[in-house]
Image (cartoon, helix red, strand yellow):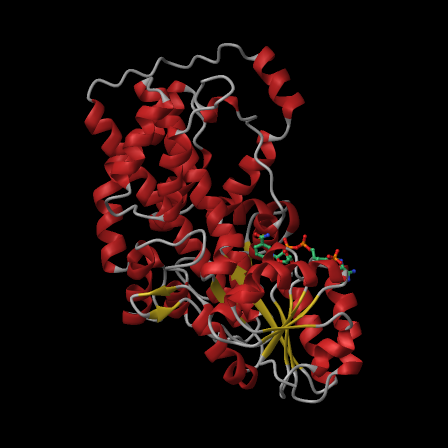
Length: 477
Ligand code: NDP
């Protein structure tokens, strides 16, 4: 046994992760259900490091040093369970099975419990950054036991992206914590992308500008507070021309956004936890709406004119700055909500997740990588019990500075009939959070009226009910 770690599942992600491990000096055992993938990896990249290829799962396991560490990188769902079932009888107590696929955290919790019963460690690990990340340094979010991290940590921290000398990997917490955090990461990614898309749409409507001109604006934004991978590639995509037609690439792409499901998972979990992640939810629903072609066509026919006003921007620079500030404020809301969800999940499942640490490992390697995450880390490091990221000093100042712009942009968008659901709902969330009184009081009144659901009073303790159908006297429950 000579290999420090093994990878089974050598499609694009597993292959690149195995190469990354080998390039960093680790001896890597290789296995794939169909052996052609193993052979082609060794044939094409065998010179990048030390690989120990195996054609059977038994030979693969036999090639590993103890305690064995096996990375499973196969299609999520049934295939992951099939591979785990194949591995269990071949492993010994103390060995570690690492699932780097996109598993739902509830599946990870179930698998962790089952493998614990066999004396095995199961480490559900979120890996972000796509194929390029897997090869050159992803953001890695391992869950599972602290003991398993003692073996995996030094390996993962070496192959992860590095920012300012700090690896984009840390132990997130027990059982499903890693996959949970990866899920919320993807939800935030949905929100980030939706906000960027709305900003583009608003700029285009307001300025009547061509995508290439808008690319320039995003390039400028990328030099400031909004600096991030997603803003950078937005400039790239907007500046791209379709070779076949010579038109702006963004104008020849069908406007129907697809999803693989992690946004949906994030929203479902937030509903269970009772955390209003309105930015992520709007982003997820906006993708769904884009796919309803029949309804969109019918609505276009039914409402050719809905009283929208032509958008007339008089001061170009001021307008661009308004959109930039509105984007930044809405983005802060989306991140604040995502971190609220991580905190709630951590409490619900006893994970003890370090929020600042989580922000740290998203600074590089992953799709939402951004300088901005340093601010989040600082905020939670300075005040771990921060009620919401919105009130941390830098965030509060930025939102305060941006509020007039935010209101102008959302109001103008509504007047012009340009949909900006994530901008608008983020602003509504902000206003609701800071409201002195919410109309929730009326909802409590209605609930008590039709269902005797009771209410609390502002002026004294206790639980009350009004006899709505009777003499309207109040009872204390
Ligand atoms: P795929 O999700 O396309 O899965 C293909 C791999 O799964 C192949 O190695 C295949 O083996 C194996 N496989 C499928 N069914 C079985 C089975 N029943 N038993 C054994 N092996 C099976 O591969 P990717 O590389 O795209 O992704 C791997 C994992 O990483 C997935 O969970 C994915 O969600 C996740 N992920 C992907 C990212 C990406 O950007 N693609 C980013 C982050 C995570 P065979 O060759 O024999 O068919």
